[in-house]
Amino acid sequence: MSQAVAAAGLHLVTADELLRMPDDGVRRELVRGEVREMSPAGSRHGRIGARILSRLEAYVREQGLGEVYNADTGFLLASNPDTVRAPDVGFVSRERADPVGDIEEFWPGAPDLAIEVVSPSDLFSEVDEKVAEYLDAGCRMVMVVDPRRRAATVYRSRSDIVLLTENDSLEGGDVVPGWTLPLRDVFPQT
Image (cartoon, rainbow, N blue to C red):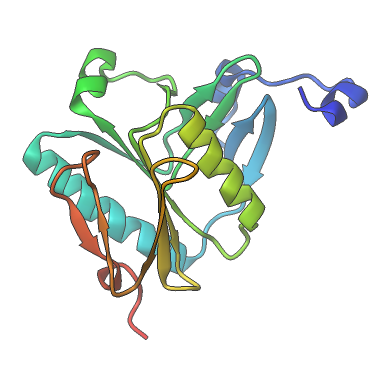
């Protein structure tokens, strides 16, 4: 529990409480029991996320590798206090997805691959926090796509980090074997 929450005597929200909140069009994540509202993404962010999701989903479905989730899907990364994050694109391997099945709750754990598209309103400290939370919860790969720099950063751990330019490709490695996506196909033409 954060000191600010404890000092204010605020109630920490659980993942179950977050799931039951009314669908009022506001996207929310839960970070150590504190609800964080997220501003709607702009057009460029949505277009880039859709391009990545559509290409990944088509490949994963064709190869029978697992399930791909959009930004509406919460992943329960930690409990007591609860943390629920919703990457712009998430992938869970068939080996992990099949036993869980088609549930209505938040996915129980981290995705195998989390992809975040940086929004103009995102602070780098917040993006770094998300990356660390995904990795600490067992995510095998995190990709952070930055439209402003026309670049991406791929994290396999806190020390295994690869920087990519728009001339490089996102590659699934052993997480999504055989999947590649040239970054120049993701970014709007200049």
